[in-house]
Image 1 (spheres, rainbow, N blue to C red):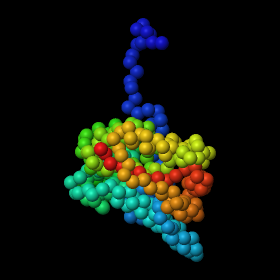
Image 2 (image 1 turned 120 degrees about the vertical axis):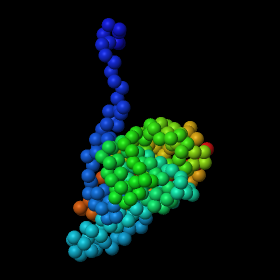
Image 3 (image 1 turned 180 degrees about the vertical axis):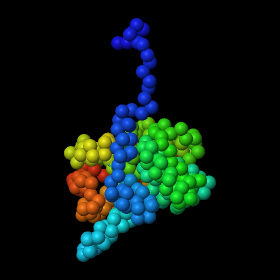
Image 4 (image 1 turned 90 degrees about the vertical axis):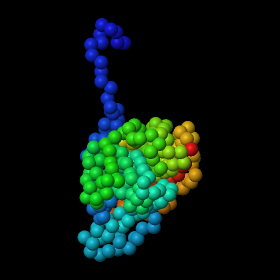
Length: 291
Ligand code: GPP
Ligand code: MG
């Protein structure tokens, strides 16, 4: 207990929790070839997985260097397809509309949304290094007037209330409390605005989080939510689902191909495949309207 006599100096309230500092440390240090080498293909740097059928003929490529190159391109194509798929669900956006990318990583998703819709985008990441990298990419592309990245907390962005026609999380919700996150999306979105999330979630019908889900949490320092938590938290925060799609089957070819890419693997590939195959984990998209 603190008394008037023992209290000498007020303890400053940290702007970030210890957990958030550890997450920022991870992303400030992260340089996985599976992200950087794929990004270098066309300067779209993604931090999510891929969807769609894979061209497995790359595995039969006899020249080792060419095989590595073809694998890199094919995995990038699948990740790009995921980003395009998400962007295609943001609704009809005009060039004057604003969109918010919560947990933007090195920025690829915001560029994809801007190129598709012509809209302004604001990306937010807890990693100063990612924000700087992403802004440099936007400058190089000459789109920095419309595509901006901020080193901020996605739960407390400081961006303008009601200014956004669309917003999304692409594999970043597992780092935050959903009620806090959806309250911030609901604040930023105008009425009738569109919210999209693609996420890995654990499957309530399995029970609690499986061993594989726990291994994924440890690998990325995150806390994967159950599927049910998304719908409860959305209902509490004026976000009404209009479309839900299980992308689990669509992402398995990506992981099957990635596990064969010796120059890119991070060691988590078999855990994802096991988690998806044993039914404990799902790759899910939810599209919702802000009412
Ligand atoms: C991928 O990022 C996504 C996350 C780290 C969040 C966890 C996602 C789940 C679906 C559980 P990345 O592209 O940086 O990862 P990697 O380095 O493995 O490619
Ligand atoms: Mg990646």
